[in-house]
Amino acid sequence: MLRCCAPAALVAATLCFVPACGSTAGDDSSDASPADAAITDAATASDGARPDADLGAPITAPDRTWTFIPFPDSSCDDGTPTGIGVSLVAGAPGVLIYLNGGGECYDYNTCFVLNTAARGPFGAAQFAQVSSGGFVQSLFDRNLSGSPFAAWSHIFVPYCTGDLHTGERDTTYTMGANSRVYHHRGRSNLVAYLRRIAASFPAGTRVALAGSSAGGYGAVYSHDLFRQSFPTGRFYVIDDSGPLLAGDGIPAAQRTAWYANWGLGWLDALCATCRSDMSQLHSALATRYPADRTALISSVRDQTIASYLMLTPANLEAAVRALAATLSALPERRAFLLPGNSHTTLGNPGTLTAGDGFSLMGWLGQQLLDDTGWVSHTQ
Image: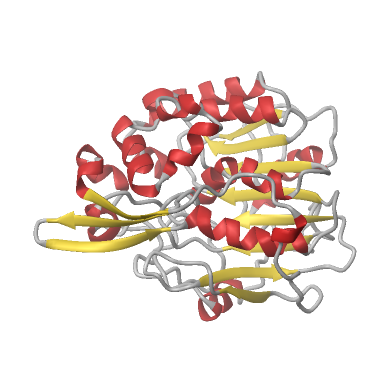
């Protein structure tokens, strides 16, 4: 299993496309409840189409050069501001927006004792470390054979909020005599970024919203938010290793804690049934955006996801296969399952194949080229 361990901060020599390490979040899920958290600041709703007047200044940066763009109105878990990395191409046919992974946390134990989520700060120095290897062989590699993104603009969204990029709250967690504030501002950050990202590309730009692990979950959760900022043109979602399993495949205690402590109540307007079954979000999004192509990529026995969700390998495989079947029955939603228990794929997609031998890179190319032969590979 490839993991990038950095409980105090996301610091790596190369992009890992993986969750944060430490003990798994499942160790304390039985104690997860709203009772151990006090909400100190509920953010205002961030949904709704954004008029041009609400857009910020377009992002400018040297062509095809990774540049960190700070956002003073963003926040990591510790309250420090963060930003995004960009590699822009003048006249690019599309923009790839990648949400990084890094675990998740929802109570004092997971957030401050086990450190199961990537922590801040994440600024220019941290991005320089992550991007120093040039993202070679990753989805950002412009020389990667068969990549549909070689000529696109690229945007890297870091992750330091512990909330699958969904949070809109600052929460005070308590354990005994200890109390600490955690800024779950993943969604609030995306809203800030989108004001400038949307201003940087013309109407009708093709958009691919991708993410791995926590970022894969975030890509699905944020589909509607990004679509509001890019209401025209083709839109694609790539969920790498973030399966929204049906029912209690995501334990009820975790779901309850996510809603209470991250401020996930914004999701009710889009998917009221998601409180009991997160997989229903796919049906809601497919109904709202039937032409948007969404890809799920997952190992059938992903040991990292199994640990976080407290599932046996066999139970995870059954749940992942059931989700893949559900997706395949929806408009423009397909699944690509790999044998084994590895976690995340977009850090090195050119080497991977499904159980039937079909290449992941070829499959992503079919998705992005609107190939009518794009089907699920689940053997």
